[in-house]
Image (tube, rainbow, N blue to C red; front, side):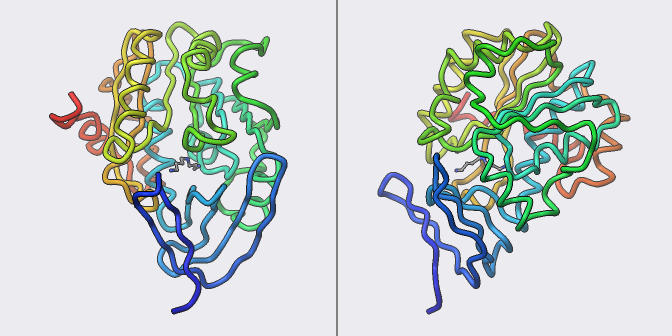
Length: 273
Ligand code: SPD
């Protein structure tokens, strides 16, 4: 049979991956961090028993979190990433030459170190435009005294453990505080199938804070939960107003994202309208 790793969701659903090797296992101050080789998904990061990302499928998630916001927001010089410790989100952001500075605020420095050691190709850690701060994204959104950002991206975990505070109204109000009036906030917003209540709650909460809130959908095979969702929130940016030059450039390296996928991903299924 070999060794299998199980993620259990709400004592109702289990996803298993066959593990060929364990490369890293530690309990940080905040969570259990594991990096394993799996036959189906390649090298895989697991936090507190939840599959986070894998070599084989990470492009879907990271490209879809980043490029819809980065190809539509008028100015994209300053970008903030909250979470994103594996480096995949920053890598996609840094593909845009208009980006001058990326601040990443990741709560667990041990995740960054483990990913640099075992998933070195995920990140663009040496890009001089990237600054990594180890700290609490909730406190940063509430208190940081910084120039406003053009884009804020939330690349967090599920709403349990260290990621819990990243799903509430006070945090989203902090994000709005950090954005320029023409800025965009994009975030992972869970499975509209398995976590329908969380998904709907995110939409409703953002709707009290931002003028425009648009969920969008795509695959994330490692979450095994039907389509995954992200949400695009802003005061005035139209997610359909794609800058075609930026999209064409993103397409040069993207494995999934292109302008047609971008447009199609914003179609909302009838049972979620
Ligand atoms: N169910 C797990 C959702 C985790 C979303 N974030 C993944 C981090 C990848 N950078």
